[in-house]
Image (cartoon, rainbow, N blue to C red; front, side, top):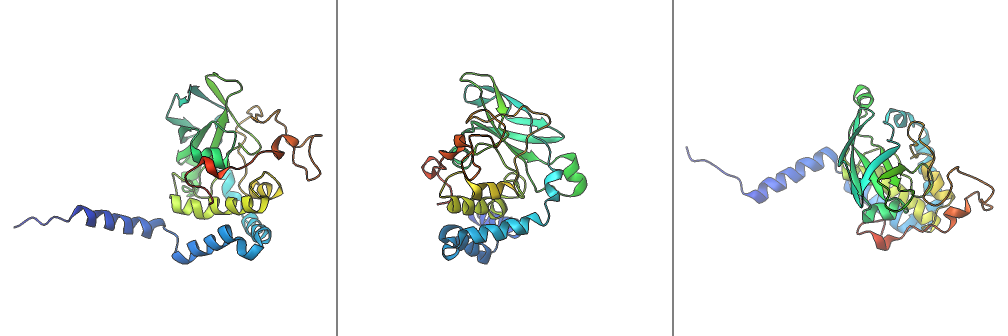
Length: 248
């Protein structure tokens, strides 16, 4: 019997279609997100953000199923000593400051993204949610980087982990809404971004020492402006020029 082979391009096309069936958002949903994020819902960005936050607050129980972030990671220059970091029955992928990290978490040097679900996630069936941890060094040349526990540089939880639930779903559930917050805040750290953080919170690890690369950690203090934003974060800007793919 003559062996029948399929051209490589057909295999790639078929694989792409299967992936989309498993996780691609609908064209209508993408169009809807584009309208909200890039056009700002006809100038009503803040009200759309408010509505999204209210809807998310209905159920945040999934956040409790996520593993904690390690308090520290070992680094060497601009490299992670371990590429894959097991912790709290989960596993993380470590990377140095990419353009994307610079834009979404300005001030962070290293990032851990959850690459394998924890035991608790498997037990509860929440295997698509993901933890993100960001790190910085206290001084140049340090071989240890510390978990950033607050502010613009800190990592945030993902309803769909970029390495667990598919990039399209992560963009749809976590990134587009953050872009909406940045549009509302005009690329600064203010109440709009804090609204986002109320439903995509920062994990502070297990008894980790507070750390913020912008200054002494500790949240709101006497140096806060009239809107409650500490002075150290007022001048932070989310700069789209540092990354290839951002909200633009």
